[in-house]
Image 1 (cartoon, rainbow, N blue to C red):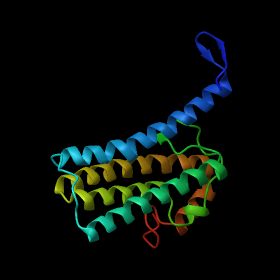
Image 2: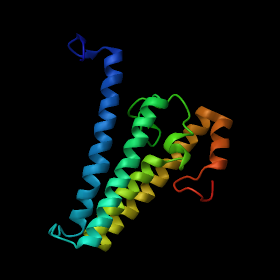
Image 3: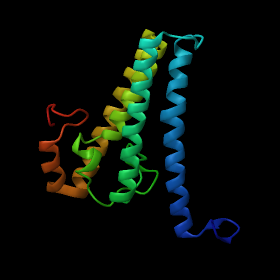
Image 4: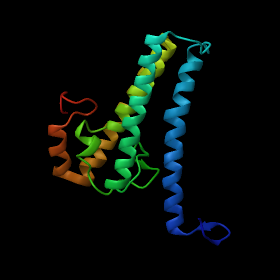
Length: 180
């Protein structure tokens, strides 16, 4: 519940909670709803008809697997890192994590939530099966890569050698890849 001290100011704690909730809502709308919709629109709004059992199975596994990885990461980030995943191009939208996370989903790679989102969206590429959907995904990957590079600068600043050590042993997006 939000307590209003006067007509225009939220209590400081309530504003923090509001920003945290706004970060989750914004992230959910952007990644789970808006991007698949853009892919569908860019693909010429194909009818979402039966696509065959094999393609439907692959689509379902990718979408559910990607969502599961992203949700696991968000829950882990909240509980262990005491923060929110929404931080865009060095602008804090929700409260930033207070602890460097190197276990849980972060054992897999340094950006498991984003990896889950990439996998989730690949499910939509398989479903739509158009070059336009693939192009939207590719543009998104490039934008997120730039975002990750910006975030890595902040993490180096905030966590120093602890983060550098983590980078040396963990891939950016995929396990068992080049560590830088």
